[in-house]
Image (cartoon, rainbow, N blue to C red; front, side, top):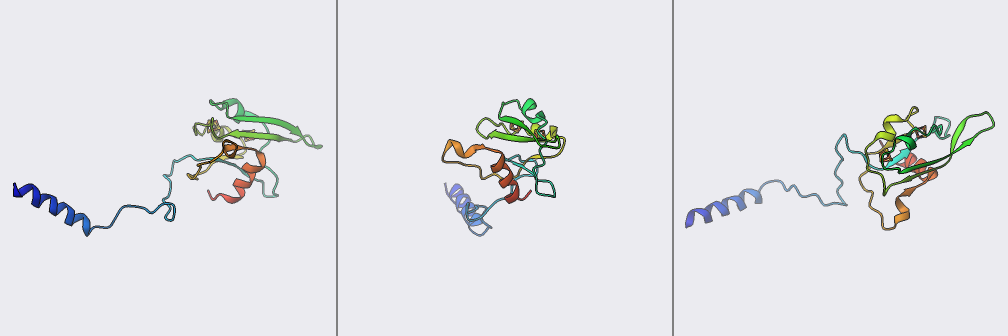
Length: 138
Ligand code: SF4
Ligand code: SF4
């Protein structure tokens, strides 16, 4: 009868003096795992222009049909994404778009704080993806 009681008290005492493992999120942040894949960014070239050359490979490979691109052409014949929409609600974070991109334009970030209050907040257009790229550290 007394044995389980002593055992219980011992466990309480043991954890009372050990370092707590609780994290006070969101004040305290925890890092993501090395292979974690969070929401995307689109990168820029050193001159500040968009890296994406609108080849359409990411749109074609995306199994969730989450990417929609409209191709534009510059005067020098270079292609660029006139519109680039990434639907964060459809995305399954497989990472195939990043894998297939020939110019490393689209990158999945370790950013895990992706909650949104409104549906529109996770429909990311070209300029939002570029802005995220300027802000998010990879
Ligand atoms: S991570 Fe996968 S599902 Fe999401 S946009 Fe890229 S290819 Fe599509
Ligand atoms: S993000 Fe990469 S794969 Fe997708 S259209 Fe642009 S260059 Fe091509």
